[in-house]
Image (cartoon, rainbow, N blue to C red):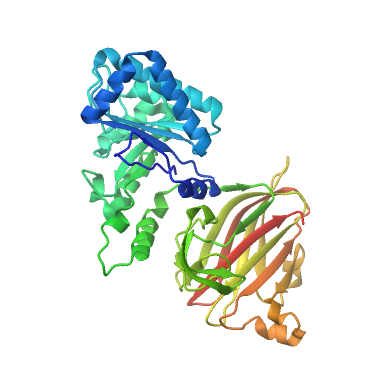
Length: 437
């Protein structure tokens, strides 16, 4: 899933630094935008047609901006007529920009928006990949299709893309302008259709959840509903980590600041650069409590929903690793954590470690790991009997450390949480994996 900020009032849009940092924390590429429109756009390009050196200079500067600001490429959106005699110069521009940015920016992308066609240079949205826009597709890393597609145009795009079918990003307009399903909370209908043809998707205008919100509605509830409906059709990004994975699930904003489970500051915070790793599932966020940062994750438990995939990962392990988890609940509760582990080497095997919250665990289940219970500082002098009681203490952050020794090299690939209790809201404040400790 690529993040593409589009702000049509500027020729060149640089993603905000908070967006860049939040995207990169999750291993996601984020693009700037080069956009020209209507008469102003025609006049700008007319100056560039005069001299190829001007085109080269613009390319140099675009790559320089991308490197300096540390984002990952551009969406090229030319929504103005191009004189047919100059169309080759636009194609040259796209081709050279793609080549040059690949040479200087690792894992960079140039995406072409479905707009100008060849050989006429008309501004004519195609809603499909075809002969009129295939040259721009060939010279770039992909095409962002306009939103008024049909089953027939998606089928044509699939056929024309060949092995590059995942480089075709089918436009889904959340504001629903001519898009299948009508947008809004029905965007899942469009996404289902896109996935049916095994193409990629480009979701435009998801600020709709905020921009159309009524005063009586909650933005957070609308946002959660929107992405929950899309979740079955989204690619889940796998976090590749060398040694340490650490998240407090902080989303970068909130009304308070917490340290080690205590509220330390009463002030509104907004800094997306401080966003930590989010889960691979859609969950509520709790701002009125937290372990570290501006809040914590809230896992809502029900009879139908006891199992939660927290993270899909690729954490390299040489010998052993330590998993730390901080939880809190208003009632007594119990959970188990499933850690999927894949061994490395000629005889690759998959293993599952079951880590249980309860103090007493079957000896057979403990053969590859041990559990240590950590408490807040004020409990450090408590007796063992008092410690045992605190395992079930309500409204207290409970921090556990599990030491796992697989005895073979490999990777942690998934972390999943399952509840024994039937109905509860569990706060999850921290999840950390440290390898080879």
